[in-house]
Image (cartoon, rainbow over all chains, first blue to last red; front, top):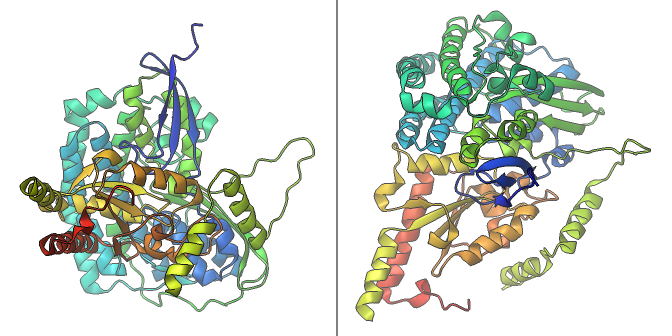
Length: 411
Length: 158
């Protein structure tokens, strides 16, 4: 009886502590968490299947909307894979511009995380401060790309917009403000007693556990694992730029905060270098409409960790298969481990500390039975019907609503 | 009674409490909604306060093209909200399904599931557009109230 839970608390899919629909079932013994069941799939939109039905160029914009926070990461990861299959030599200037946008995105994502983390520990002043400073990056991104989020910068064979001299000037001015503010955040993260006391020793994930559970990104780096695709398998222009991979040995939420805040400075450093060495030349080369048959795996260090895209082409203008492994899927196992035997009150910040993005994560994961399990291929219409039937069995039926809508439209 | 009703509707229009619910969005609209509440845009100056529970909320702000798994939760949350209640669809996905229109697991827009009072297009809708949408909704409510139109106090059975 010692380890049987007193009660189970369902958290989500709609809950004030969660920004996205996901659901946790927490087994409690008093205040202590015995185990957590994580249920995903509320955000599953069927992007991978939809990508098979659209052309490569349409897919860029579809895949960009896998996640609205790391949209450039997903789009870049996808076009890298397609470029590899097609054997396209992307101009150096395009690679540098991709790097600059990627790092600006990292700054906006980390500032966003800092605010959310502050909010989760009841430090709302930090939320307001960091989101105010985040607007500086958003302005820059809007100036360069024309949109605040979902930039639409990538195309197969390069980028769609150039960075001209006044824009470069504007970026440098913004970086000066951001660096100054980042130094202030580093000061807060390392000296503010509230933060240190609240975050130290919470959500501990040892180095061994990181390696065992395959955590990625800042979650892994905060446990002293130097894992960063930008260095391990350089893409875009990272091979020609010098920067440090920030690691920390605290192995808890505090460590993750320190890693992210320090990475802000590194990103500023990368952008300055990239702008200084920005090569001249074209920003894109013409890509064929039909991509020759082949397959490729592409890796990208998104703000949350390693993002992996697999693309299989069959010689037509549509891909045969697109597979996305978002960083949160790699980290979500670690959350379960971090929460065991901890207090319920730590749960929001521990979940927030991996910087979860469940709209990235909600891809279909197929589990094959070990004994005689066969993989099955299903076409679009069959999948559509299956989805309708599956939900009908659970009492969700769109048919009357659709009928009502049609009637209303006819009127 | 009339004066009480007047005070109540004045308070409702001057300080709407909103509930934000992600119905399968890509997070872009969600962060823009939060950005609209933070210092640069500061939706709170119009009296808008973000609430944690549907039972406290007047306006349900939805983003995303309703995935089928979230659909019955969305209806449940809508039903938990006290009357009068309004729904704002933020972003192109929430308005029509957007880029996800035709995907096997989405319902192509909030209005397929619950009635919507205001649509804010954009991918994502910028904080400026969100503020504009909310202010326009409030202005239309005020107009209806001045005209003596009772539709902002719908009967409970609707």
